[in-house]
Image (cartoon, rainbow, N blue to C red; front, side, top):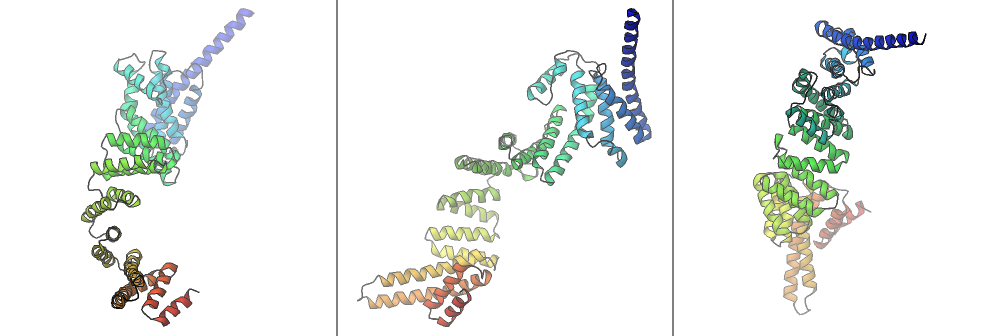
Length: 420
């Protein structure tokens, strides 16, 4: 009896093993049938069969099991039929996983079967094994996956990353772009555009270490697709600035200027640094170069006007403020600064006259006249600034003062009443 029970158990196990092998064959046949008929039901039957096989002890370590599974999911992704594409929302993940397992299980060496292709060190071992012509069960599996399937999957992951990025799911986008990049590398291609996308998503998701590492790699590769080369340096500078490392931020802007000396955004970024540090001569050099590259940019003339004013080159400051206003008549900052320039000039003359001894009557009157002339020159600009930003209290107060200094008391009173 005992022998009979053992015999029956052996027969049962053999039958189960055969059944699982049959499932793998069935999955293959269903996939081929789908490729001929494009009927979603064939894919569905194939998936049901193969997903039993990948969970069974007898067949889950076979490369062919995972290869056939990958092919079924690949056909879901490639199908133009919405019903077929909706068979599994995780088709992309499952297809990728299936092919990755296929390639390592395809090796006959037990140690190579343990490789994890999402780890850099294991990827190196994988390529070393291929170059060393390590024995595999079926060379066609690896050739087909790396040569035909992975480029397509890399594109799918890239599209998935773009969709997530647009939805502001930056962490998800980082992961999808990273998988696209990994698959491209496994197929023998370095996709620098995907590297850039991965860096951007990493930065936006707050993974600054990953972003810096990839940006540095792209800088080393002299990446400049779609003119994004200068942005690499600006992004690195922004990251370091957020980390409080202004010295490192300035270093990257300087490197960027050396690599792209005529890039407008790098010029302006460097300019902001000079202005913040009060380095007016350096700022002036930058502004001159920036204006050469963008002669119709009103902001640059305004900025240079402020630098000239700090350098006490008053005529040049006034000229640049007027140029900025000529380019953009409603540019409040330039209008206000021009009015403030004349106002301050008048106030300086008043202070100078008040400091004179009583016997300097002639000089006193001359200074008072100069002050009045400056205040009168300020009026149209301060009036315009008040018109552009009536809510600005500083402008209103300045207007009241110039009206008072030029003895236009009714106007001063009217403005004052408006803001009380």
